[in-house]
Picture 1: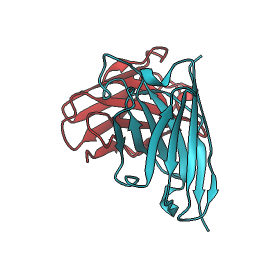
Picture 2: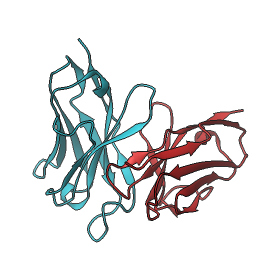
Picture 3: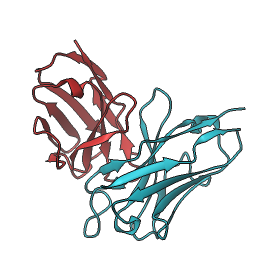
Picture 4: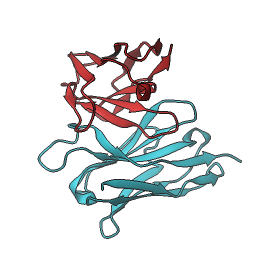
Length: 125
Length: 107
């Protein structure tokens, strides 16, 4: 069964750091693009970052560029989101999600077909 | 950035009704338009990708259509599990963007 399980969320003070993890099972991370999406309390979905299946191309929302870093460890089949210089508006549920199609398809094709359950990040003093 | 405008933002319907949700994009997106359903307290679920392709396992009562900058999600014969929030998303260009969401409530 294809599954994603996030962890690492918690309460952190403004200016602090946190690293989110997303453990994948049922597939290997180097086969699909992987994405982080967040949802602030009571708000809609916001795309945060995507890493290509090859791992060499990363994309970031302007709101997190320079503060967040997406990465992966293929040996652990785990996706990460390193979040530094956290701000109050980073408070959200963070989801990792898998691109539906692998090699042979562009990143833009297919949508995000498997999502984790989400991990909550709260930034507050 | 490509702006996504969904309408309506909320609607009330009954089980068995047909529901239509519209998504307008601020520029052409080459059909890279996806639809998700998010039930309360749950992660989003992919329903439709690339405008009109039904994801495997999704009931056929969900239909996507559109072109250019105007796209539509239609739910034929609304079921109890369809009372949720629906989001459109463009994956044509980064930053990928989502619509504001349309909340479908029970009448």
